[in-house]
Length: 284
Image (cartoon, rainbow, N blue to C red):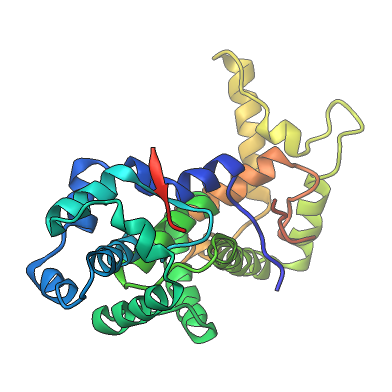
């Protein structure tokens, strides 16, 4: 499966270090241990095991993945959990050296708290949800962020960032493709030909093409008014069916129009081609 990155390097780094910048409300929400949490944690015999179990639980809540190699936990969060357990943060290093114990605790947390790992079946379910949400977002990055929140709410352990990017990108493209197909399907052969002609570069100064149609009106006056009326007559002449946009969100229509405006001869027409895309302690 080809992956389609939609995040910049800076955005990806911000995501991977998001738990370094939690505000007080977010720390309380994700990293405060409940009475039930404390009862389960107290069953561990060693301080290092109790501390490690608690840290893994909090990491699964936010940022949403278990300890990973070469990644770090903010010292402030370690101290916050340590204070709740009355344990010194130094014991965390001993715990993360004990791979078998750490793996056992991770599986136990998954079973106790109902966390789920990503699989292909879940991927199809998420794709349906993403397609229902895509019209609300102006970019695939916005949809990616919504998916992150959705995964966390459902206690789904975040898969690789590249996979989350691909899920958001695929759903966004599918929704866009369906909209383009609907719009193109409403056109008669003559309308297709007329729209194709509109996309051609002007040869004569008086040629009416897409660039002319999008040109600024200019200063108010009779000349500008006549120019505007000429453009309106041209558009009416295509006899486009307004019902063709039924079910397509206004935001998506604006996005498609904006992309066509940026690339008037490359991505236009639904009639000719598809649009193109473009301080801390270590875990180990």
